Image (tube, rainbow, N blue to C red; front, top):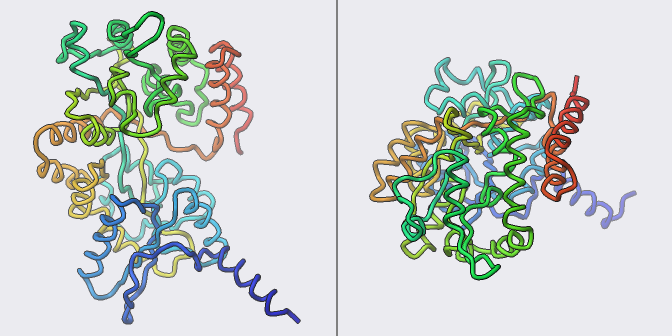
Length: 430
């Protein structure tokens, strides 16, 4: 016979597995009053985003009398593990926010509910095309796009004027980017007081520069491994050359100052050009003390190439095993519809998936905020997402250590990418 203590331990373990007894806060304690109750999981718990998503939930609850949505906040990271545990235990959330680039993996693993039968044929036409593509697996719908992002080049116009560069003529190619950076560098003896540009700061890594150089082609294209290409080798050589030029000690010293928005080297004037997600503009606005900033596309590889940016984002989906998929889809339709998307975008300064909602949010902004937000939406046309291929789910974990070895001077770029090509090819799941 189980003792009381043992029964208590078992009950605790069951609760943790099912993620149904989470100690995390729920957004509402209101009774469902006979309505169908949906549990909506998000990781949006900040002082900025939590009130916004909870107002959206409240608005939905007040808009109809059949469904009541409860918000459950789970910290970043925890939400993914608890989602899988709850699905395995047969007690999942009804709706969850999840990564946009891994929808196919969850569909393949039977972790999400197929939603095709709950929508019309033209349903995805309301979203940006590059986002709509990520939620279809074998032409079947498994999630709905919610928001996204794009990377752009921010530059300090005052620093441009200081060294004689035209602030209305930012660099358009990699060669110009390097040329401008050299002019913007400022030294006091052997010590750099300002660095013109460094390609691995911000949120555009070596892998992104490699795909940029290669015409936007990722490391897996149409089922083929495309790690070791001439353009990607050339790009990795270019990225590594910047560290050699500035010196590891200089790069490490500047990197150490990345602790807060106020100390960000671009915002405090120690770096003149910076690649980051579009929402980085809000940090400049709030902490830049009136910095005169320009925002433009990431420079193209050369004059014959196009501008390419990388993007990510999130979807809303129904975990496998949810008891109320039809009601969950009605709530998802609200979250991803024009009005709710307009509200999210205008309050968060965030790129949303719904085209009409995004354009409506633009109309509510003024001045530089409106100018930048409009540009960010336009830049989505040259932004590419790289959904994780089912056959190569771990390909970046095989490539990244090799890129690190190049940056540490342990491998030449050509050797590293040759090894990466072979490693990824050998890892293919049949």
